[in-house]
Length: 82
Image (cartoon, rainbow, N blue to C red; front, side):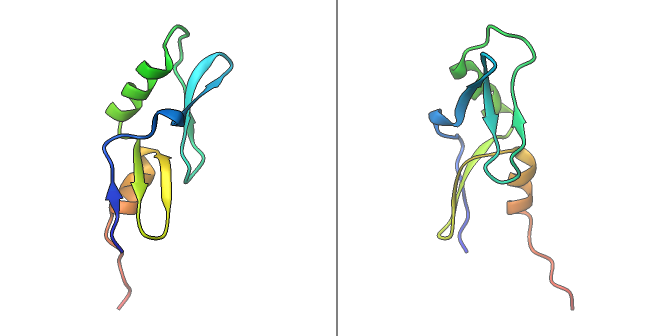
């Protein structure tokens, strides 16, 4: 399986929740939003990229927005019991 980890999520990955921009992981459903108001969606997307949120794509799936923990889990080699 070929896994492509893109550098950026798509722009539409940011949604408004309670008047604040929010990103949600398509894998584990974890979400993050800023603690303070006044941050725009574009600024929040840049912050998410800086913190490791990515788009993951393979021949079997395409996740638009994935949190750093899930990115690490997908990229980690699979251990097989012997």
